[in-house]
Length: 335
Ligand code: FA5
Image 1: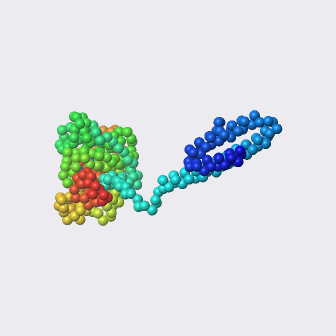
Image 2: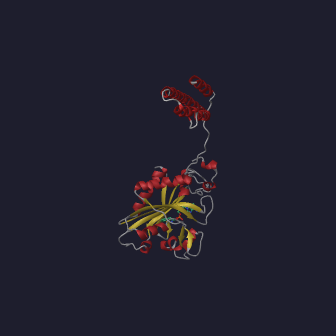
Image 3: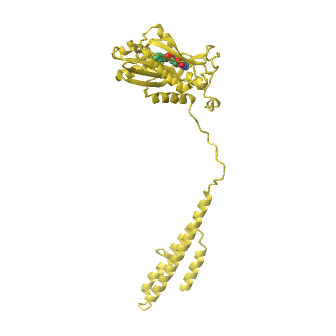
């Protein structure tokens, strides 16, 4: 009977093909109502004299069956793993799929390049709102309502008192209202104007600069701007300061650099002059200092504001400012 049981068990074990088959067979032999379990239970009906020998036999069969189960289980598990590995196998020799990737917009690149130069010189970075009050955008900067100076910067009005800011200069006032000199800041941001041609767009970026302390002179302004332009365009680019007018600076200047597109010979971008205006600057008008409560006898300072797109046009030799905003991928890919 013992031999028969083992033989029958081994035959059944041979037909096991999966973990499910194996678990069914385990229940059949070792489960609560399994063949071996019943055999062990029936020992109580055997005479006490024969019981130890019968018990030993059935226990040894049980151990045999358990050992066989363990062997078959480990074989099945290995086969399963093999199958899984084959199904999920990755061919590392296959060529990769092309994933298109983006890059920084040339204006964002220009903004970081310019801010980096000023941060290296020790300037801090400040920001302000794009929807600005008439007071900060104009009046605090010595541009009263109905003054002709407003024509230089016509803008989009939200209502009588709120405008889309025309320059980053209002942030100067906001910062000076809160902090005492010494001050050394730059203000990057978007500005808006009623303008549109090959060198003007209705939205563009400016970077404002402001330095206030005791004893600041026009020489400091020239030194900072020349150092900046030297870093950005190299030592051979011609730079010139031209007298100009801004209500919030006195004296005021506009700074031009030699037109890189035509090498100074005259083209559409420089309108034949060989020079392109890139920024406005000057010594802060005492009226602005009075508006923020600074003592004009004690402090002086300079300010400047540059057009980022204009600088990018020269840096990358672009002859139409609108190309930056058309977002033609063939144009953007070149940067
Ligand atoms: C101003 O905006 C003054 N706030 C600058 C300033 C700051 C002067 C501090 C003194 C002290 P202006 O209007 O010239 O100035 O503009 C500054 C620069 O912005 C110009 O030199 C030009 O490079 C650029 N710019 C002006 N209008 C446009 C436009 N519509 N599109 C693109 N760039 C422009």
